[in-house]
Each structure stands twice: as structure tokens, then as C-alpha cells.
Image (cartoon, rainbow, N blue to C red; front, side):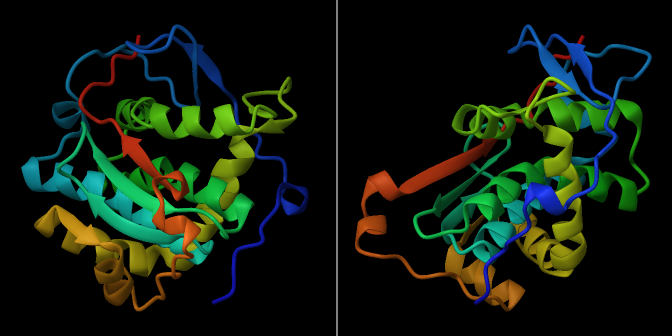
Length: 228
């Protein structure tokens, strides 16, 4: 299976305007959507979805992680909506394309944003909640790659990741939606079940990847937005 090789040098300037806000978990948090009215509370009512819609919203986030992770050469062990506030995608990253894995992490929130638009549920508030609930993914990326940040002061603007992730979602959206629909119903799927559903290969693990050192989990928190 070919790996992803989309790198920042080949991407246009994202032209993203960032706003610095405080949240329940961050004194300073950068977002690209800023509604007129602040909101603090559970995400589900503010998104305008019922229980099934909320499951689909969360499932598209995790499915994007899983599908783009596989496309980057990572082995997906399992995905669950039963753990944490939003969900968890457990993957083995050793041997995967580094930039592809960064984009797989960044793609969760962009998949949420795209799903909201397709369902005619997108509002500035829903988009803000989506960004705030992606703080775990963003923290993971910026901690591992300190040169990635927000705005002109960053060596690489996070908006570039959004632009590249959106391009990959265009390519893999049919697989992501197929997996998300199944995941919303089952709540838990193995990587091999996901690969079969998407008609993709789940890259194999090396002996070293069998150890805990080779495995990470992505968490998506969607219980509260806490933005103000």
C-alpha cells in the first residue's frame, strides 16, 4: 500500500484567521470560528443533534483518525466510542509516514466540521465546539512538533494541517463515512473490521509494535465545550 507523502512545502498558505480564547481546560486556545454568543455546557444540545446524531458525529471523528492512519501506514488496533468523553482510536505508529500520521491526528476535527456541513448542522457555535473538543489532538501534535503553532509567529501554521487534512478527506470520505456508520451502531470495532468495511489494508505490526511502547491512543473529548 502506498503511503501518504503530502508535505507543507507543497501547500498554499491556508489564510486562516485565528482567535485566542480561554476554555475550561486552556487559558489560551486558538480557534478559527468565533460565534457572537459564548457558550459553556454539554456539546450535544448545542450541536443540534439527537443521540444517534451525536454518535455519528463522534464516529466520523474516530473513523477519520483510523482511515487516514491506515493510509499513512499505521496499524489500527481498535476504535471505541465507549471510552472517554468522545472516543479512542488505538494505533501502532512505528513504520508509518510521519507527516501522514500528523494529518491523521488533525483530521478528526475536520471530519466533524465536514459532517456538520453535509447534515446542514454547521453553525459558528457548532464549529467552535468541534475545535474546542479537539484539544487532545491539537495538544498531541504541538507537543510532538513544537514548530507547529497558530498564526504568523509559528514556523508552520496549524491551518496548513487543516488544509492538507481537508484534501485527504476528499479522497477518503466514502471509506470514512462507511466506517462511521458502522461504528456509531456498534460502538467498538477492531482495526481489521474497519479495514474490511473500508476495503483497505490494515498495515501489519512488527514484533516491536506488539509492545506497549509502540502503541498510542487518540482521545476526542466531546462532553463539554467550555469556551468563553
